[in-house]
Length: 285
Ligand code: NAP
Image 1 (tube, helix red, strand yellow):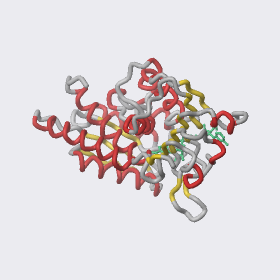
Image 2 (spheres, rainbow, N blue to C red):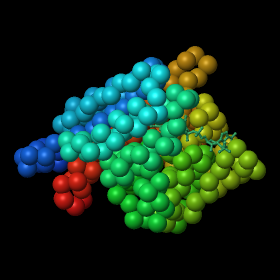
Image 3 (cartoon, protein in one colour):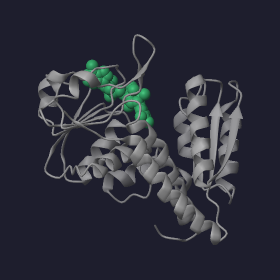
Image 4 (tube, helix red, strand yellow):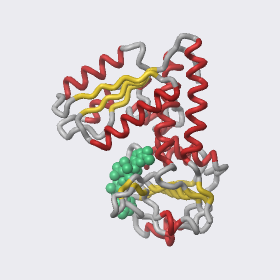
Protein backbone atom coordinates (compact mmCIF):
# COMPACT_ATOMS: atom_id res chain seq x y z
CA UNK A 1 0.00 0.00 0.00
CA UNK A 2 1.33 3.41 -0.96
CA UNK A 3 2.49 6.09 1.44
CA UNK A 4 0.00 8.97 1.26
CA UNK A 5 1.78 12.28 0.74
CA UNK A 6 -0.15 14.73 2.86
CA UNK A 7 -0.47 18.06 1.04
CA UNK A 8 -2.38 19.63 3.91
CA UNK A 9 0.46 18.95 6.31
CA UNK A 10 3.25 20.02 3.94
CA UNK A 11 1.37 23.16 2.89
CA UNK A 12 0.87 24.08 6.56
CA UNK A 13 4.63 23.77 7.04
CA UNK A 14 5.30 26.04 4.05
CA UNK A 15 2.74 28.60 5.26
CA UNK A 16 4.23 28.54 8.76
CA UNK A 17 7.68 29.20 7.28
CA UNK A 18 6.27 32.07 5.21
CA UNK A 19 4.40 33.53 8.22
CA UNK A 20 7.61 33.48 10.24
CA UNK A 21 9.51 35.36 7.51
CA UNK A 22 6.65 37.81 6.96
CA UNK A 23 6.74 38.65 10.68
CA UNK A 24 10.49 39.29 10.45
CA UNK A 25 9.96 41.56 7.43
CA UNK A 26 7.24 43.47 9.26
CA UNK A 27 9.76 44.29 11.96
CA UNK A 28 11.75 46.03 9.22
CA UNK A 29 8.59 47.94 8.18
CA UNK A 30 7.97 45.81 5.08
CA UNK A 31 4.55 44.27 4.52
CA UNK A 32 4.24 42.01 1.46
CA UNK A 33 1.11 42.81 -0.55
CA UNK A 34 -0.81 40.71 -3.06
CA UNK A 35 -3.29 42.20 -5.54
CA UNK A 36 -5.85 39.68 -6.78
CA UNK A 37 -7.81 40.57 -9.89
CA UNK A 38 -11.00 38.68 -10.68
CA UNK A 39 -13.17 39.48 -13.68
CA UNK A 40 -16.77 38.24 -13.87
CA UNK A 41 -18.60 35.83 -11.62
CA UNK A 42 -17.24 32.37 -12.35
CA UNK A 43 -18.02 30.40 -9.15
CA UNK A 44 -14.83 28.32 -9.26
CA UNK A 45 -12.69 31.46 -9.67
CA UNK A 46 -14.53 33.04 -6.74
CA UNK A 47 -13.66 30.05 -4.51
CA UNK A 48 -9.98 30.17 -5.57
CA UNK A 49 -9.78 33.91 -4.95
CA UNK A 50 -11.40 33.60 -1.51
CA UNK A 51 -8.95 30.84 -0.58
CA UNK A 52 -6.00 32.95 -1.68
CA UNK A 53 -7.20 35.95 0.35
CA UNK A 54 -7.73 33.75 3.39
CA UNK A 55 -4.22 32.30 3.07
CA UNK A 56 -2.77 35.83 2.82
CA UNK A 57 -4.55 36.84 6.03
CA UNK A 58 -3.22 33.76 7.81
CA UNK A 59 0.43 34.41 6.96
CA UNK A 60 0.29 38.20 7.45
CA UNK A 61 0.38 39.20 3.77
CA UNK A 62 -1.74 42.24 2.89
CA UNK A 63 -4.19 41.40 0.10
CA UNK A 64 -6.43 43.57 -1.98
CA UNK A 65 -9.12 42.22 -4.27
CA UNK A 66 -10.12 43.90 -7.51
CA UNK A 67 -13.45 42.35 -8.52
CA UNK A 68 -14.32 43.67 -11.96
CA UNK A 69 -17.59 43.14 -13.80
CA UNK A 70 -17.78 40.57 -16.61
CA UNK A 71 -18.07 43.34 -19.23
CA UNK A 72 -14.77 44.99 -18.24
CA UNK A 73 -12.87 46.09 -21.33
CA UNK A 74 -9.29 45.14 -22.15
CA UNK A 75 -8.32 48.78 -21.77
CA UNK A 76 -9.79 48.99 -18.25
CA UNK A 77 -8.06 45.78 -17.20
CA UNK A 78 -4.73 46.88 -18.62
CA UNK A 79 -5.05 50.24 -16.85
CA UNK A 80 -5.55 48.44 -13.54
CA UNK A 81 -2.49 46.24 -14.11
CA UNK A 82 -0.38 49.31 -14.90
CA UNK A 83 -1.59 51.04 -11.71
CA UNK A 84 -0.73 47.98 -9.64
CA UNK A 85 2.70 47.67 -11.29
CA UNK A 86 3.43 51.19 -10.03
CA UNK A 87 2.21 50.68 -6.45
CA UNK A 88 4.96 50.25 -3.86
CA UNK A 89 2.66 48.45 -1.39
CA UNK A 90 1.82 45.73 -3.92
CA UNK A 91 4.56 43.10 -4.22
CA UNK A 92 2.64 40.58 -6.30
CA UNK A 93 -0.15 40.72 -8.87
CA UNK A 94 -2.34 37.81 -9.73
CA UNK A 95 -5.04 37.80 -12.37
CA UNK A 96 -7.39 34.87 -11.80
CA UNK A 97 -7.77 32.83 -14.99
CA UNK A 98 -9.68 32.08 -17.09
CA UNK A 99 -10.78 35.56 -18.09
CA UNK A 100 -14.07 36.09 -19.95
CA UNK A 101 -13.65 35.20 -23.63
CA UNK A 102 -13.57 38.79 -24.92
CA UNK A 103 -10.42 39.55 -22.93
CA UNK A 104 -6.88 38.79 -24.10
CA UNK A 105 -5.18 36.79 -21.32
CA UNK A 106 -1.80 36.82 -23.01
CA UNK A 107 -1.72 40.61 -23.17
CA UNK A 108 -2.69 40.86 -19.49
CA UNK A 109 -0.03 38.37 -18.38
CA UNK A 110 2.62 40.19 -20.41
CA UNK A 111 1.59 43.53 -18.86
CA UNK A 112 2.28 42.36 -15.29
CA UNK A 113 5.74 43.50 -14.22
CA UNK A 114 7.90 40.32 -14.18
CA UNK A 115 9.11 41.12 -10.65
CA UNK A 116 5.47 41.12 -9.47
CA UNK A 117 4.44 38.06 -11.51
CA UNK A 118 3.91 35.70 -8.57
CA UNK A 119 2.19 33.13 -10.80
CA UNK A 120 5.36 32.99 -12.97
CA UNK A 121 3.32 33.10 -16.17
CA UNK A 122 5.11 36.08 -17.77
CA UNK A 123 7.26 35.00 -20.75
CA UNK A 124 10.35 36.42 -19.09
CA UNK A 125 9.80 34.27 -16.00
CA UNK A 126 8.95 31.27 -18.17
CA UNK A 127 12.21 31.80 -20.06
CA UNK A 128 14.15 32.04 -16.82
CA UNK A 129 12.73 28.68 -15.73
CA UNK A 130 13.83 27.18 -19.04
CA UNK A 131 17.45 28.26 -18.47
CA UNK A 132 17.37 27.34 -14.79
CA UNK A 133 17.94 30.92 -13.57
CA UNK A 134 14.61 31.69 -11.97
CA UNK A 135 13.21 33.61 -9.06
CA UNK A 136 9.55 32.61 -9.20
CA UNK A 137 8.34 29.14 -10.01
CA UNK A 138 4.75 28.51 -11.09
CA UNK A 139 2.85 27.56 -7.95
CA UNK A 140 1.46 24.15 -8.87
CA UNK A 141 4.66 22.53 -10.24
CA UNK A 142 6.64 24.13 -7.40
CA UNK A 143 4.14 22.61 -4.97
CA UNK A 144 4.62 19.18 -6.55
CA UNK A 145 8.39 19.45 -6.08
CA UNK A 146 7.90 20.44 -2.46
CA UNK A 147 5.68 17.37 -1.94
CA UNK A 148 8.29 15.08 -3.50
CA UNK A 149 11.02 16.59 -1.30
CA UNK A 150 8.85 16.21 1.79
CA UNK A 151 8.49 12.51 1.05
CA UNK A 152 12.24 12.12 0.46
CA UNK A 153 11.70 11.35 -3.23
CA UNK A 154 14.41 12.68 -5.53
CA UNK A 155 13.90 12.75 -9.30
CA UNK A 156 17.65 12.28 -9.83
CA UNK A 157 18.26 9.47 -12.31
CA UNK A 158 14.59 8.46 -12.22
CA UNK A 159 12.17 7.99 -15.08
CA UNK A 160 9.67 10.83 -14.71
CA UNK A 161 6.53 10.93 -16.81
CA UNK A 162 4.28 13.98 -16.92
CA UNK A 163 0.87 13.57 -18.51
CA UNK A 164 -0.18 16.99 -19.81
CA UNK A 165 1.74 19.78 -21.55
CA UNK A 166 -0.09 22.93 -20.50
CA UNK A 167 1.89 26.11 -19.96
CA UNK A 168 0.80 26.36 -16.33
CA UNK A 169 1.36 22.77 -15.22
CA UNK A 170 2.74 20.15 -17.62
CA UNK A 171 5.59 22.05 -19.31
CA UNK A 172 7.04 23.78 -16.21
CA UNK A 173 6.58 20.53 -14.27
CA UNK A 174 8.77 18.75 -16.79
CA UNK A 175 11.43 21.48 -16.53
CA UNK A 176 11.55 21.29 -12.73
CA UNK A 177 11.94 17.51 -12.80
CA UNK A 178 14.67 17.92 -15.41
CA UNK A 179 16.46 20.55 -13.29
CA UNK A 180 16.58 17.94 -10.54
CA UNK A 181 18.14 15.43 -12.93
CA UNK A 182 15.10 13.32 -13.75
CA UNK A 183 14.82 11.67 -17.16
CA UNK A 184 11.60 13.28 -18.26
CA UNK A 185 8.94 12.28 -20.78
CA UNK A 186 6.00 14.59 -21.45
CA UNK A 187 2.79 12.95 -22.69
CA UNK A 188 -0.28 14.52 -24.28
CA UNK A 189 -3.38 13.62 -26.22
CA UNK A 190 -1.38 12.43 -29.26
CA UNK A 191 1.00 10.21 -27.29
CA UNK A 192 1.04 6.66 -28.57
CA UNK A 193 0.98 3.75 -26.10
CA UNK A 194 0.37 6.06 -23.15
CA UNK A 195 -0.09 3.10 -20.84
CA UNK A 196 3.34 1.70 -21.69
CA UNK A 197 5.04 5.09 -21.34
CA UNK A 198 3.40 5.65 -17.95
CA UNK A 199 4.39 2.19 -16.76
CA UNK A 200 8.05 3.19 -17.16
CA UNK A 201 7.65 5.99 -14.63
CA UNK A 202 9.27 5.99 -11.21
CA UNK A 203 7.55 9.36 -10.76
CA UNK A 204 4.24 9.83 -12.58
CA UNK A 205 2.61 13.27 -12.57
CA UNK A 206 -0.94 13.47 -13.90
CA UNK A 207 -2.13 16.89 -15.12
CA UNK A 208 -4.80 15.89 -17.61
CA UNK A 209 -8.09 17.26 -16.30
CA UNK A 210 -9.97 13.96 -16.66
CA UNK A 211 -11.49 12.23 -13.66
CA UNK A 212 -9.86 8.91 -12.73
CA UNK A 213 -7.89 8.85 -16.01
CA UNK A 214 -4.85 7.07 -14.55
CA UNK A 215 -5.71 3.48 -13.76
CA UNK A 216 -3.68 0.82 -11.94
CA UNK A 217 -2.49 -0.82 -15.17
CA UNK A 218 -0.70 2.46 -16.06
CA UNK A 219 1.39 2.49 -12.88
CA UNK A 220 4.66 0.70 -12.23
CA UNK A 221 4.58 -1.03 -8.84
CA UNK A 222 6.22 1.23 -6.25
CA UNK A 223 6.02 4.41 -8.35
CA UNK A 224 5.34 7.82 -6.84
CA UNK A 225 2.05 9.08 -8.30
CA UNK A 226 1.32 12.79 -8.08
CA UNK A 227 -2.20 13.83 -8.96
CA UNK A 228 -2.57 17.44 -10.08
CA UNK A 229 -6.10 16.99 -11.44
CA UNK A 230 -9.10 18.72 -9.94
CA UNK A 231 -12.25 17.28 -11.41
CA UNK A 232 -15.77 16.30 -10.41
CA UNK A 233 -16.85 12.67 -10.56
CA UNK A 234 -20.30 11.42 -11.63
CA UNK A 235 -21.64 12.25 -8.16
CA UNK A 236 -20.22 15.79 -8.33
CA UNK A 237 -17.52 14.95 -5.79
CA UNK A 238 -14.05 16.48 -6.13
CA UNK A 239 -11.60 13.95 -7.56
CA UNK A 240 -8.24 13.86 -9.28
CA UNK A 241 -6.91 12.48 -12.55
CA UNK A 242 -5.90 9.28 -10.79
CA UNK A 243 -8.25 6.47 -9.87
CA UNK A 244 -7.05 6.67 -6.28
CA UNK A 245 -8.65 3.54 -4.84
CA UNK A 246 -7.32 1.35 -7.66
CA UNK A 247 -3.84 2.92 -7.85
CA UNK A 248 -3.06 3.24 -4.14
CA UNK A 249 -2.35 -0.51 -3.65
CA UNK A 250 0.12 -0.49 -6.59
CA UNK A 251 1.96 2.80 -6.03
CA UNK A 252 4.80 3.41 -3.59
CA UNK A 253 3.60 6.92 -2.76
CA UNK A 254 0.53 8.83 -3.83
CA UNK A 255 -1.14 12.22 -3.33
CA UNK A 256 -4.86 12.28 -2.59
CA UNK A 257 -7.41 14.69 -4.06
CA UNK A 258 -8.46 16.70 -2.15
CA UNK A 259 -5.58 17.24 0.27
CA UNK A 260 -2.65 16.71 -2.09
CA UNK A 261 -1.38 19.19 -4.67
CA UNK A 262 -4.27 21.66 -4.25
CA UNK A 263 -3.25 23.13 -0.88
CA UNK A 264 0.36 23.34 -2.08
CA UNK A 265 -0.53 25.69 -4.93
CA UNK A 266 -1.75 28.37 -2.53
CA UNK A 267 1.16 27.85 -0.13
CA UNK A 268 3.62 28.38 -2.99
CA UNK A 269 1.76 31.54 -3.99
CA UNK A 270 2.35 32.85 -0.47
CA UNK A 271 6.02 31.93 -0.80
CA UNK A 272 6.30 33.74 -4.14
CA UNK A 273 4.62 36.88 -2.75
CA UNK A 274 7.04 36.92 0.16
CA UNK A 275 9.96 36.47 -2.25
CA UNK A 276 8.67 39.32 -4.45
CA UNK A 277 8.53 41.65 -1.42
CA UNK A 278 12.05 40.70 -0.41
CA UNK A 279 13.47 41.19 -3.89
CA UNK A 280 11.71 44.55 -4.33
CA UNK A 281 13.23 45.69 -1.05
CA UNK A 282 16.74 44.65 -1.97
CA UNK A 283 16.74 41.60 0.29
CA UNK A 284 18.07 38.66 -1.64
CA UNK A 285 16.36 35.35 -1.18
P1 NAP B 1 -5.14 21.62 -19.74
O1 NAP B 1 -4.57 22.94 -20.13
O2 NAP B 1 -6.51 21.26 -20.20
O3 NAP B 1 -4.12 20.48 -20.24
C1 NAP B 1 -4.45 19.13 -20.18
C2 NAP B 1 -3.36 18.33 -20.83
O4 NAP B 1 -3.76 16.97 -20.78
C3 NAP B 1 -3.11 18.68 -22.30
O5 NAP B 1 -1.74 18.81 -22.54
C4 NAP B 1 -3.71 17.52 -23.06
O6 NAP B 1 -3.04 17.17 -24.25
C5 NAP B 1 -3.54 16.39 -22.06
N1 NAP B 1 -4.52 15.34 -22.33
C6 NAP B 1 -5.85 15.47 -22.49
N2 NAP B 1 -6.40 14.28 -22.78
C7 NAP B 1 -5.40 13.38 -22.84
C8 NAP B 1 -5.32 12.01 -23.11
N3 NAP B 1 -6.41 11.29 -23.40
N4 NAP B 1 -4.12 11.42 -23.06
C9 NAP B 1 -2.99 12.11 -22.75
N5 NAP B 1 -3.01 13.44 -22.48
C10 NAP B 1 -4.20 14.06 -22.53
O7 NAP B 1 -5.15 21.43 -18.17
P2 NAP B 1 -4.21 22.06 -17.02
O8 NAP B 1 -4.52 23.48 -16.83
O9 NAP B 1 -2.80 21.64 -17.21
O10 NAP B 1 -4.80 21.28 -15.75
C11 NAP B 1 -4.79 19.88 -15.66
C12 NAP B 1 -5.56 19.45 -14.44
O11 NAP B 1 -4.93 20.00 -13.29
C13 NAP B 1 -7.01 19.97 -14.36
O12 NAP B 1 -7.81 19.02 -13.70
C14 NAP B 1 -6.90 21.21 -13.52
O13 NAP B 1 -8.12 21.53 -12.85
C15 NAP B 1 -5.85 20.79 -12.54
N6 NAP B 1 -5.10 21.87 -11.90
C16 NAP B 1 -4.95 21.79 -10.57
C17 NAP B 1 -4.23 22.75 -9.91
C18 NAP B 1 -4.05 22.60 -8.44
O14 NAP B 1 -3.76 23.56 -7.77
N7 NAP B 1 -4.21 21.38 -7.92
C19 NAP B 1 -3.68 23.81 -10.59
C20 NAP B 1 -3.81 23.87 -11.99
C21 NAP B 1 -4.53 22.88 -12.64
P3 NAP B 1 -3.02 18.15 -25.57
O15 NAP B 1 -2.04 19.25 -25.22
O16 NAP B 1 -2.56 17.28 -26.65
O17 NAP B 1 -4.40 18.68 -25.73
